[in-house]
Amino acid sequence: MQGEWIRRAQGAASAVFVHGILSSGETCWRNDNGTYWPDLLQNETELGSLGIYVFTYETGIFSGSYGLGDIVDALNVHLGLDGVLESKRLIFVCHSMGGIVVRRFIVEQAVGLIEAEKEIDLFLVASPSLGSSYADWLSRLVQLVGNVQADALRFVRSNEWLKDLDKDFMNLKERGKLKIKGRELVEDRFVEIKKIPLWMFWKRQVVEFSSAARYFGESFKVPISDHFSIAKPKDKTAIQHRLLCRFVSENVLSLEPATREPLPPPPDPDRPPIPADISRIIKYAPALLIGREDETRLLNDAWAKAKKSNVTKRPHVVTFVALGGEGKTSLVAKWAADLAYQNWPGCDAAFAWSFYSQGTREEVAASSDLFLKEALIFFGDPAMAGRAQGAFDKGQRLAHLVGEKRRFSSSMAWSRYNMRPIRRHPANSRTKASPRCSRGSPPTTKVFASSPPAIRSGTCGHTREVQSVRRSLSAFLTRQGWNYFVSSE
Image (cartoon, rainbow, N blue to C red; front, side, top):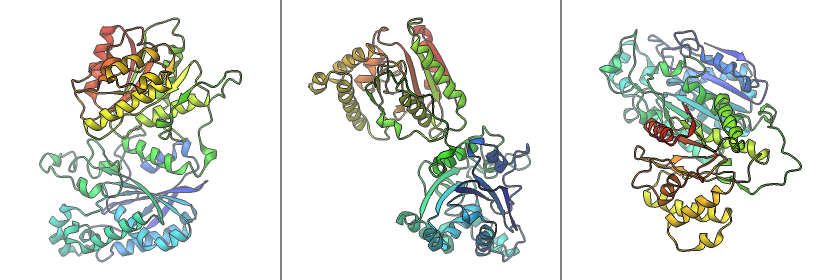
C-alpha cells in the first residue's frame, strides 16, 4: 500500500488516481503499449499546475478480511500524510471499485471536507455504483476464499452496505453543502482476456449502464472498450483521455486564471463596435480548449478565406462530425468568443442561436418561430417579425436580409438520419440548413436550403452527430461546386 506523487501540485488542484479490485496503481492505468494514463495527464502542458497522485491499496484473490472500510482508512491516511488534502480541489479518477472506495471516503469525511471548503470532482471509469451482477455469480467462490472486497461488489438489490452508501452519497450531493461535480464513463462490452474475445459469448458488460451511469448527467460509453481496457488509453488521442483533460480544465482553471490560454490579438481601436448577440452559445466556451489546435486552425483558415470573398464567391463549409459530448459546441463557442474579443474582424454583424433540443417536434417548431422573430428583429425588420405570416415567408425574408451582409450566425440542421436536432454554428455567412432536409423539417430550414446562390455565400461552420449525414452533405456540396472542409472525429 502506498501513494505516489507523479507531480506535486503547483496550484489549487490535484488529481488522484484510484484503481479497482484485483489491480494496482501500476497495472490498472497502463496500456499494453506501455502508455501510462497518469503520465499522459502529466504531459498536458496546459495543465502544468495540476498535481497528479496515484494511490495503491491491498487487493487480491486472497486479500481475505481486508475490506472496503480498511481501504478507505488507508486512502484518508495517505492523502493526509502526503499533502494531497492541502489542495482546494480534489479530482478523483476512479476505476471500478475505486469509485466505491472514494465515495465512501467522501461520505465519511464530509464534515471535514465541508469545513475546509474543499471542492470534489469525480471522474468515474466503469465504476459499479450499484454493484455488478457478475459479483453475485461469484459469491460462492468469494465465500470459499473469504474475499470481503468482492462480496461488497454484489448488486445493490442484495447488498445493503452498497445500498446505504448509494443513499448517503446521493443525499450529500443533492444537499449542495459540499461541491461535487462528476463525469461517468461506461464500458462497451464484456472483457477480452489474452486476445480471447469473451464478449462474443457474454453480451452483458461487467458493469452495466444502470450501475456505471448513476449520479451525473452526460455519461459516455467508450466504444470498443471492456472493463479493463477502458482505464488504459493507448495515447493522448484516446477519447477517455481527452474527456478527462476537458473535465479537468473546465473544473480547475476557474481557480487558476494564470494558466488560461493567452488572449487573441486585441481589436482594432479605430473600428466601431458591430451589432452582436452570441449570448446563446458563449456560455459553452471553456477557459481552455485542449487538443483542438487542428480544428481551431481549420476554422481560422476558413474565416480568413471568407474575408477574401472578393476573390472567390463560393462558400466554404466546415462540418465537424463527432459523438455527443466530444466538444463540438465547446470548440465553436471558444472560437466565437475569441472573434468577439477582436470585435469580429471582417464581419458586419454577429448573431448566434442554438436549436439543440431533446423535445418533441412541436417544441422544436416553437423554438423555430422564436428564432425567426429574434433574428428578423436583430437584422433590421421588426415589422416582419411581428406579422402573422408563416415561417416560410419569414425565413425567406431573413435569408435575404442576412445575404446582404457578412456575418456570423447560427441556425440548425435536420436530417432524416437523425432523431434529434443537430447543433449548427455557421460563421461569417448566411443562415442555412443542411441541403438534405427531411419532410418533417421546419419551413425555415427548407427556405435556407433552397435559397439562391447569391445568398449562400461566405463561410459556414456547423456540428453534426451522425456520420451518414456527412456523406449526404459532401455529395450535395460537390454537385453544387462548393469548396468545403470536413473534419471527422
